Image (cartoon, rainbow, N blue to C red; front, side, top):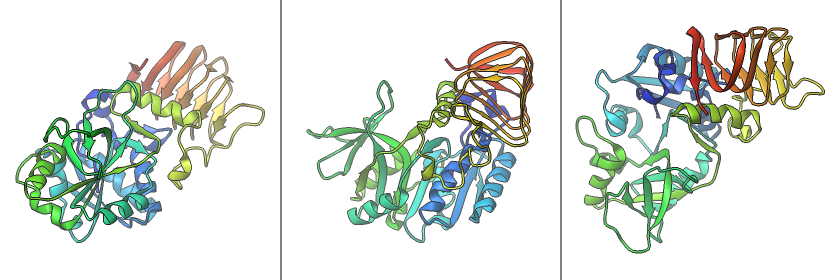
Amino acid sequence: MVLCAGLGTRLRPLTERWPKPAVPLLGRPLLRYALAGLRAAGVREVGINTHHLSQVMEATARAECARLGLGFTAVHEPVIQGTGGGIRGLRAFLEGGDALVVNGDVLFACDYAAVLASHRASKAAATMVLLPMPEGETYNAVELDGAKRVRRIAGIGPAVPGLTRWHFSGVHVLSPRAWAAFGAGPEDVNRDVYPRLWAQGGEVHGAVVSGAWSDLGTPQRYLAAHQQLLFGQVPLEAFPGASPFDEAPARPALVRVHVHPSARLDGKVTGPAWVGPGAVVEAGASLGAGVSVGPSATVRAGAQLNRCAVLDGAEVGPGLYEDRILAPGGVSLAAG
């Protein structure tokens, strides 16, 4: 299951056009990366929940699953149910065996096969996939004991001596016996379901992994994900068939400048940069380092861009733009 029902409030006004898992990331819906990683691990059936812009979200997910040959199921939530309620809505789809649950708004190079093996070896009712706490971030910690059992989540649970603090990646594995801990109505899987599972005597395992992870929930982090792709900091081999560079060959004699054959690049470019299908960069425009120009976008003469993401269909007029997300309708969102 990929959780897709969030409102994406911190990314407005972008999420007034795209649900967060459908926001474009170098011309691909963010969801494509998650689906490609899951398929590489052997997943063949995917379910999603929808709420905000539900028709757009379902159509995007259905098309992406069809592209990868994945079976598709969707459940709509007229009233948002939280992560626990959202998972519960797909219980009939998920409960037949070990189920992977993934957040739809992150870019995570996860070895899902290794995660499943760790979960099964632990014999726990559920597993949370954990990473070292990102430097400078204030995410709520998941705390493990020496046996890799989750004992505290966001301060919920006993303060047992010797616990170590980790960052939750957004990936769960649920065994069939975990369903007994789900309640009714809106609930959070971490703060409500797992404490209930502990009270029932069930264990939650912590699978500590390494891998590139990005939360795209704010303008700063969303733009940073574009930069990480452009500068080669994302291991695209973890997402077979999702690379934005596959159809945009590098230009000779330029450093990491990828241009789709249907794009027109007449302006100057420093790179790293990516210019998507049908995009136009006019003569007299300048693309500095870390610039992406999405499909059917236009960068007019006199525009100077540095560290910018021009999203699909946007038009950028003359002027200096730095550390910005530029979207259709004249949206210019500071992300520095």
